[in-house]
Amino acid sequence: MKLIYAPIRKRALQIVSHYPSPDFYQDHFSSNELSRQYFETNPFTVQLRTFVAKKLEDGFGHGLEHAVKVAMDAGALMIIENKFVGSSNDVINRRAIIVQCAALLHDIKRKQENHAVRGAAYARNVLTTYPFDPDEIEDICLAIRNHEAFKNTVKSNTLQGSLVSDCLYDADKFRWGPDNFSDTVWTMASFFKIPVVKFMELYPGGMKKIAKIRRTFRTDTGKKYGPQFIDIGLAIGEELFDVINTEFAHLL
Image (cartoon, rainbow, N blue to C red; front, side, top):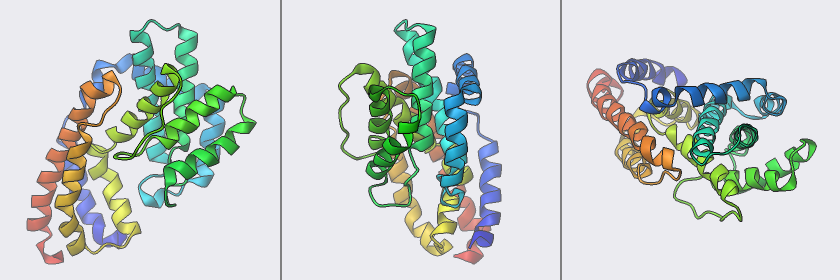
């Protein structure tokens, strides 16, 4: 099945390459770079990334590469939101690391039913060996619990706790843009062994679901930049739909 989708994915990557990167990365270049620096040098994220790499399976579209991208963007969102309210550098650093750890663990139970709830419980056990305060562990676990779209959320008792949840959610949903067509759908289609004919039957419904994400972003920064991620993804998806129907008609 992976071989069948390989040429379609190749064309999808060509289409994605013709679209601009979302403005979020240029407009907030310094925050994105600071997030990367925190992620690559902090001992907590370095250790947790090594742990997660052994537990996540990449063949499902929500593996380590996905977790790292979410961690980078979630950290950047946390930095931006905290700078806006005048938080100290120490606070910004700590909160960025917390949300990055949540991002690394958010799909740890992705293949299980109610994966967000199960993932939160699993994360709580994992984090007992890390030097986080109980409130920080609670923020991480609650963020994992709250990261699914179109599901009820559990409210945090603090604004910073809510922000961890919101930053994780928005960074995860940024992936519903261009990343969806460069990576996620192909690994999932291959994993579930979905015939191309069935894939195309499901395609319009999938596009409608992506479009609904546009209205769900939670942070101020996510609300500003998230819709563009989705719009780019939808444009790519529409172009790709026509390409599959013409260039790959023999598979339908």
